Image (cartoon, rainbow, N blue to C red; front, side, top):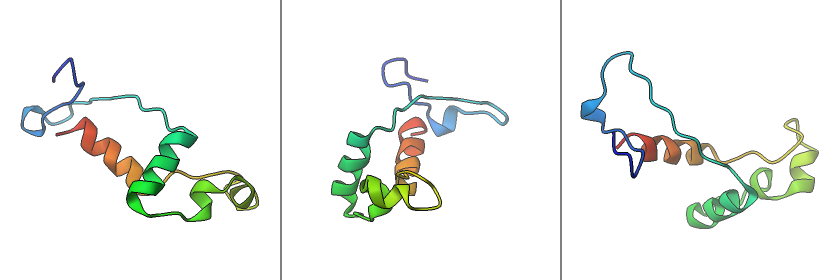
Length: 74
């Protein structure tokens, strides 16, 4: 695992080994992901719309989680 990038290489992982990395999901991160992905669904970016949803607030894009997984395991 690289200390500078905090990234594990898939070929170096062993069965049952755990790795972790912390990411902060902020409004700015969600807005930037909406721009690059083109996914401007109001559940992600509109506070009033999201507050009225069953989630009671904005929800990060599912693929944002996928991007974080990819950033953790190269």
